Image 1 (cartoon, one colour):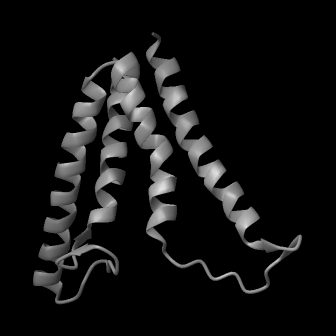
Image 2: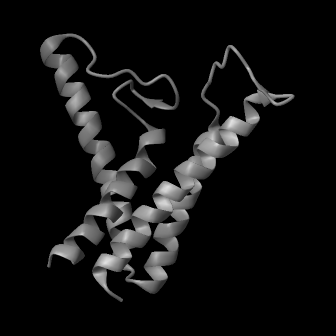
Image 3: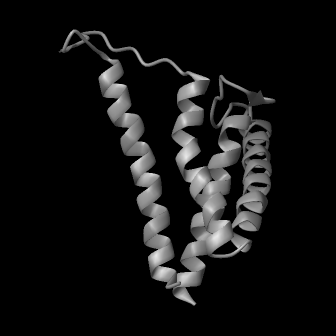
Length: 135
């Protein structure tokens, strides 16, 4: 397949997943056809997993159709990105004396979060597709 096509398909799937989640969110926050006045969006693991399900599924499908390397990049970046984020957060707190960022959910010693692991992996998949397009 054409590397440009693979990149466009991947980005399209990510945008589609975000669009579906946004659409369902708007439906959820309407009651009797009237939008709720005080819409407080709290973190829900189910919403987070749903938001990530479409892009992660795209990576899995593209590992079968494009190359298994996209899955390798996903896993490598998921681990390295998380470790790098932890090291930067820890170093900043050690040197400056305050936290660079705060994670409230599923925190790893306050410097990173388990929730950011798949996001780092998706960045790796995107970088893999971009590198195939450029070369």
